[in-house]
Every structure is written in C-alpha cells, then in structure tokens.
Image (cartoon, rainbow over all chains, first blue to last red; front, side):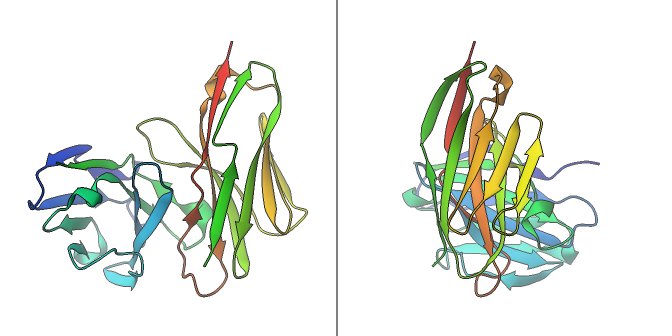
Length: 114
Length: 112
C-alpha cells in the first residue's frame, strides 16, 4: 500500500510570500492530521480532518494558516503571508480510526522562511 | 494541559550496551501512550501503544513498559541500525480530541 505522500519535500520562501503544502493520505483513510515541528521543539498538533470536515483545529496557530481537504481526499495547508516563525517541518498523517497506533506519517515538508 | 517529557535528550551507546529511555507524562485521563521511531528526513514510525499501568509490549530488541506517571523504552543489546530519534506521545481520553501530544524525543546513537 502506498504511504502518505507530502510535497514539496522542501520549500524556501521569503517572508510575506504564500506557500501551499500538500498531503495525499493513504487511500481509504478518513482521518487526516497535520502536525508541525519547529526547530528544537516537540511535534505539535495543528488540526484533524474527518473526510472533508474539520474535526479539531485547536492547534492552528493563527488565521494565516488555512487547511482544506477537497472531497475527503488530499489536503492542502496554506500559509499566507508567511512569517519567520513559521519555519519548521510540517507532517501529515492519516489513519482509518482515531487511535494513535493507526497513524501513518508522511516524510514531512521542511519549510524555511527567510 | 497534557505534557510529555523525555530523557535523556541524547544517548550514545556501544553496540550490545543495553539501556532505557524515559518518558514522563501528565494527561487528563490516558487513552494511550505511544512510542514512535523517527529516522532523519522521515516521519515518525509507529512502534507501540500502551493503554494501562503494568502493560508491556516487545518488538525485537525493544520493550516498552508503562506506569501511571511514566513509560520506559528498554533497548537490549542494541545494534547500529537502532540509531534513531525515539518519540513518546500521549492521547487523552477527553478534552484533547484525538490529537497526540509529543515529547521532544531521545536521539539514540549506537556505535560499533
């Protein structure tokens, strides 16, 4: 089975620009999660989709971040405008259920804002 | 607020030298405690889930244990291929949704 795919793998943008990250979950996984790891800190939850609906977006840092999941398939995370503190590695995970053992993580997108 | 603290931050072992990694946690009702392995440039890879105090799980050279306040990941006779960052995470029964709260990880290096 194909894993969780994220792209781009790396992105370097200037402060104030817009970046869109994409995640393709494992086929058939209704649950899709976004997490982020900022340098030196722990991986932190951003939000959770069940199919196309946002189940929990309590971890989204501010309104510069917009996540969508079209038709319950792939998801995008847009940062507009990007700030320096947005730099980090953004991970996507998907699962058939909501228990942690079912999570499959992607390899992440490393975002650098300069 | 749920919290996870892992120690040590980094650990260097000789091949065959057994040791333990610690994960201390506070959570408003534990649904599960998870151990993941992360290799450089990759996402976390699931290892174990523990649900209640006293539970133990094993996989090859790894054994995870759980008490009401902490979990240990015991590594017996490690090999260089066990080198990775080991992450601990908790999932709360209520109030935290389905999210995982992670620790900062222990970076393990096993040398020949």
